Amino acid sequence: MADLSLGMLTLAYRPFLDPLDLHDVWFWLLVPLAVLIAVAYKAVRVPDMGQYWKQTALFSGQIILGVVGLFIAAIIVLNYVLPAWT
Amino acid sequence: MSDTTTSAQHGPPHPEPHGLNVPHGVCALLFPGLGHLVRGEPRRALFAAIGVLGMFFGGLLIGGVDVVDSKEDKWWFYGQAFVGPLAFGVDWYHQNHLKAHPVPGVPPGAGSDASFTTSDAQLGDRGEHKLRSVLPGEKRVVTDVEVLVGRGGVQSTRRLPVVVPAGEGEGPPNTKSLAKVNEIGTLYALCAGMLNLIVVLDALFPTLRRKPKPAVGTSAAASAKAGASHG
Image (cartoon, each protein chain N blue to C red):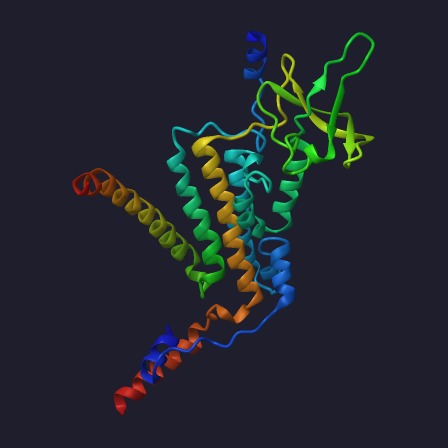
């Protein structure tokens, strides 16, 4: 059993088949997600493509601020509102 | 902006009449951004494709191919499916080349091969030998399986992928992702599908988006303002 575990541990990482070990930094993955959402959304919604990058940056910031705002709201509700209410 | 100025003077804004372009919508559904490319908007097509494909393959990179699974995560897959044939292709590969049936087998003895026996009911979606991901400590092999078909139990031999214990240095063809990494990877692929739905709708109904008309719009708004001030 020890040999089996050792053999499994030494298997190489295979992109797209094995997950990345990002459990400790998962929340940072929301940043590229917000940017990619903005890139795709603004590609079809912005009227003037000359404003594309400005609009994309603005929308990315809005998404990130929205998520951070939801995080803060959740912290307040869970740590202060609900304990005071119950 | 000119639309807003004009509509402020003449009542509530009315949506522009929009057309229906089915071929462009179908192209957009076939591959992210293809509808806009065919329509003659290569920059929009490129950025839409970068965004959608970046999210889809980003999700696959973060959570592995396990994040696209029409059997075990079907509700998520319904959203991911809007990426198009690519999502179905990845799911097909996942189901047919990475999963296996957990059919209990008799280990090969002296001079005999391993034998696996099951029934078609057990191999079905609700059976205990249905396809599943191969776990650590197991591996996937394709071998002959004796399958009892129907209530009469007619025996037939099929070549099926089955789960067997892994040896040293062996393992599953892919690794299931867990917890947050799985959730974020699934979310990436889902957002890719949802965003591609917006791209498809924009290609399908092309005039829904405000058309760029900087020179005409600006001058019309300026003359309308001038007219209003003189009047």
